[in-house]
Amino acid sequence: MDMRRIIYVLIIIFVLILVISISLKPIIISLAKAQLNKVFIDSKVSIRGCNLKLLHALTLSGMEIKKGQIYDFKIKEVNIQYKPLSIINRNISKISLKDALIIVNLRQDNILGLSKHINLQPQKRIFLINLIDLSNLDLDINSTDLILQAKLSVRLNLAKQLIDYLNLQIDSLKKAEFRLQKAYLEINQMPSYGQLYIEQFKYNKVKIDKITSIAKLKDKSLFLGPLTADVFGGSIEGEIRFEIEKNGKYFMYLKFKDLDLNTLVNDFNLNEKVQINGRLDGAVTLKGIGLQINVLDGDFTTAEPGGTLTIKDTGFLEKIARNSNQPLDILVESFKDYHYNNGVMRLSLEGDNLILVIDLEGETGKRNLNIIVHNFKLRREK
View 1 (cartoon, helix red, strand yellow):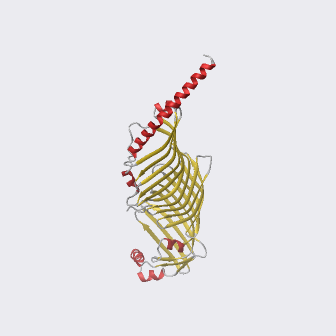
View 2 (cartoon, rainbow, N blue to C red):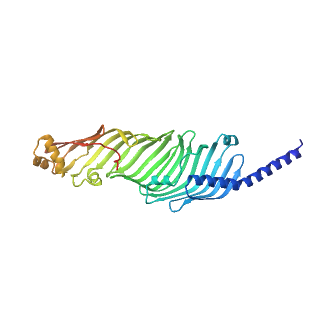
View 3 (cartoon, rainbow, N blue to C red):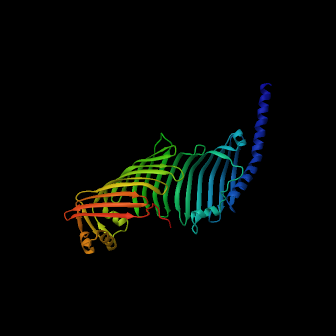
């Protein structure tokens, strides 16, 4: 076959591919809308454009999925990359979503109520996806139990079940007792390093400000450290390790410096029970899985020149009086404006009980307190 015939054959093949691609576009859009309607129940689906490259890629543009005021998903571009043989085996090399806006409004329902509007049941013919790449995904979620405004970019290696890259910016997050303000996390698989910054973290009555750390991601382990933060008028230094998986393990070692005991009491709203001033240094080790704590050990010492302590909770003093066979009036007086020079506090977990042992020493003698919090949990069930 001479060169002229080869050129003619190539031109014919090119024209056929072009004609097939053009004719397939409305069919592909129709099929995509039909599949999306099966997932997003009673929603309105629109797709403005379709670009098909038969041998390796399909791009859908101008996609919107909307259901009244409940949700509105806008995606500028969805790109599906594949190989001809892999499609036969129902395998997709990569799916990319670019510039998406996700708005969810469930003001009268919790976030799980979204499942009533989305069919997440797996289809019979499932395509296996190797990589998912989300770029510039804006999240605006409002529900009775979750409020979130954030921006996300993430690359997920589903074949290896790993996070290759993550960039998360949170303007605000509220869920139950948990609060975040102005948070930023960027991580890559090692050897690259990322960073963490949180302007303010609140859990229940604990408030931590200006959390900063180097972030390291290796396989399914996330390392944060060296980590620094401000808490209770003092500071924290330490390191944290998470296993990124369902009910993942975690390990924390935190050193506390110059904690203000009066600030701690105020933040926990304990003013009516106890009045104390002074400074505290120490360290805590914490290990667990999910919300379950397996190990909790802490040792603290008071800083010079000590401080003063007054216990106002007469109910607490009555229990001490009964257990020690001491007159209540003497105990009340001994814990009124008591000045201590030295103090040691030990924190531990025995079973489900949190144990706090406090030994104080001052000019008027020693004071010893044993406090037990039964059925201690990171989060209380409602």
